[in-house]
Amino acid sequence: MPEATIEPWLRGTLTEVNAVHRGVLHALQLAEEDVARWCGELSDTEIHERPFNLPSVGFQIRHIARSLDRLLTYAEGEDLSAEQLTALKAEMEADATREAIFAEFNQAIAEAKRRVVALLAVDLNRSRTVGRKRLPTSVGGLLVHIADHSQRHVGQAITTAKVVRAPR
Image (tube, rainbow, N blue to C red; front, side, top):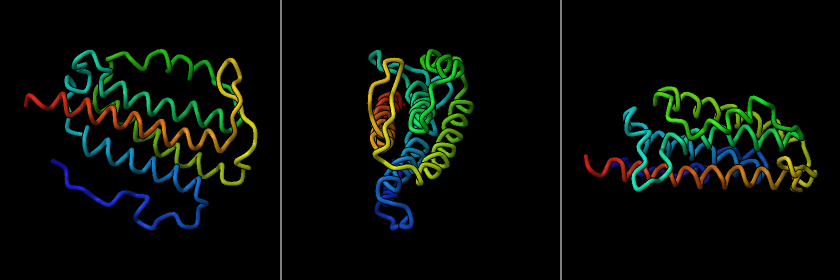
């Protein structure tokens, strides 16, 4: 069982960043650490297993990576590209190796951190829209959702990984 560590938000880091952005950055750091700790040793087969018809760990990790890109695109005031929409439709496919899935995840986390920092100069109350229906939100709302959504799916990935590893 992995050793417990102090969570990023309790390490006294990123104190130069405002509280909202800091919370998002800490949530991304925790996601990165937890996925590595709890899911990193799964095999190519295990990462795609769907015990009790749960979404696979591979799906959860891909979904985190790709949703970060989509949510940050909205936070930046942009619409999704055709490439992003295609990637969304392919999240459930079990066609990638664990190495490819983790590489995509790690790259997405690094890029998300960079993009969150780039949003420091943007007013958190600035209006944004989400999706084809252009549902109303704000930059701050999107940033909070990025943290919340990432943690939700990390939790699901960890739980599924534990179920997959249980028979070992």
